[in-house]
Length: 435
Image 1 (tube, one colour):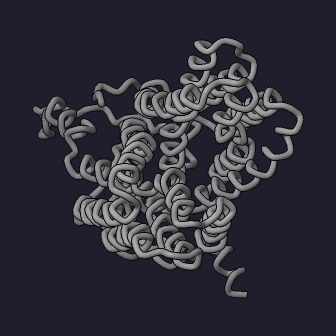
Image 2: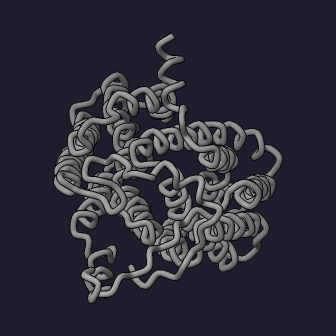
Image 3: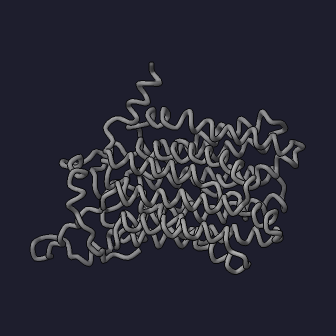
């Protein structure tokens, strides 16, 4: 009964358009079975070297960094719906081209384009959710999306094993087809959500000068937000060790690859079971405290590995840092959504997403270097230190942080709940402020 009530409370009151976004995320990740297979496709299916496969996989991240920044600017300038639709179409075509390309340069170009398209969609998606959902409901809305993402990823892993038996080309074409389905959902069901910017008041009327207001809301001049982005980069870099150095360290300690598969499966299981109830549990609590606890759980969850000698301790480690991941994901993105002015939501979300894209470079490369040079114990103690810095940085950034569209307490201002009804009557105007 309690589980049913918790679920009902998590889904109650969210606007209809939100559920179309949620459905598109679930479809997109459930059909995202090609990206994890790129390296295997190039080495096993096409006979390329491991070095070339690593280079191509790195291009996904390079495209992602560019895509999040470009997507953020386009989200504010062109519109949320147009950016999301264009990014999905671009990704679908790029994904199919990876499976059909027959030259190294064409594979590299298609992979770079795919990474750009995949990540360009993220700022638009997050901005749409910030437009649709009032501040007091954003954490649970983002938690529901994170849950859908992880369920979709689990489904994709199972489908990939079935499709790959029919050939790698089918995997990439099918992935592109599911992305086209997401584009169709956006086209048919999602309106443009960007609110109409208020007309700037003149200084003679008693308002601050337009140039001053513009400088105040330029993303890189928002010191607290930049600190949050840097802290998130460190947080994400530590998280990346789960997929890069953790399996290597476990094998070095005498465990098998199947042992890694067993403990890492605990991550997905805990997210599916605990994401919604834990988000409800911390709802309304201090975001400063939640992000501090999340960072410390991540830091010392990986730090535990320094004294791990068996699968039980590694499983405990996964459980600890997964709890940190569960707490950080919805709260971090909700902070960004609340902090960003309506006309700059794309840029704010784009820069925040860039922290995660950058972590996909910095984490694996830095972790592998430390592991090879200094050994596993040094790596895990370093993760504990870096994660602790990330926790303190996130807490310092969020402590006392107000928002541009809500009061400092995070409650919606009068009329906030009426915003969704007005969406279809709004239009996007060009924004003057640059990233």
